[in-house]
Length: 270
Ligand SMILES: C[S@@+](CC[C@H](N)C(=O)[O-])C[C@H]1O[C@@H](n2cnc3c(N)ncnc32)[C@H](O)[C@@H]1O
Image (tube, rainbow, N blue to C red; front, side):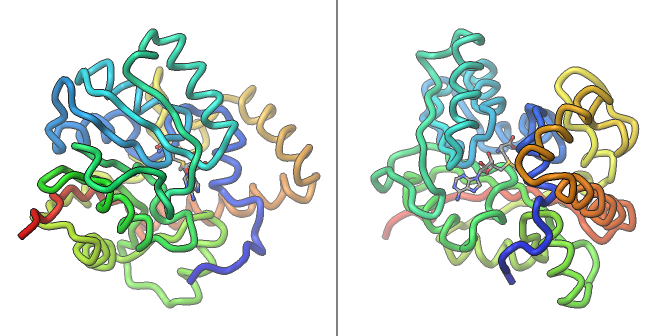
């Protein structure tokens, strides 16, 4: 279903160009839930795949006392994340490496917990991302992902259009589950309805409650982001993002697009 983006810059591009710290629906609430389901405990070794601005890695280290390696493909994300780790005073517990989630630069059976928040659907091969996550996870270790998931059965052409405008590929609930199983995950539990509420998509700010999709960014943040998009993609790019966002927001508000959390265990050997 992945096609070269005729709708660039996508909503995902705009999110990454902006300065929001939590880059997934459900915000801290979902991050906390993910860590609890994975039973993170002091001293555990955690891999946060596609760690973005490092917000989650820092939260896990500070709240649960785990040691976290974050991996992201973007040097800029890793630079920001490293700066935040220094500011938070957790440099002894959190580090970031550059890499592609489809080819994780770690030995097999390395981590107690492997997490990917909202970025399995971004690279070309989502199955490879999950295969890699399971490869580096210890047997009986916990794996968790949360991902954009179709709530309604839509024509393929509509799914493709929304995916391209969004910049990630949502799948059906059962498709995500089957892919996790194919990668070697057992005992899968999931939460779908509660994370699919539109307000979960907007409530991604660290410091305030967001009432609707128009107030995710402050006016100042919107202007700064528009300037940055203009610098990279020109005015056409800014207009394209407005168009893409409108279609993405409608899809969430119409109940077509939801968000699902999956947690499982790596099948033990033998
Ligand atoms: C939606 S953001 C999620 C970031 C973070 N997990 C969070 O929830 O705040 C997607 C992240 O995936 C990263 N990314 C995209 N493609 C990747 C790839 N092939 N390998 C590793 N990271 C990737 C982006 O740089 C970005 O930081």
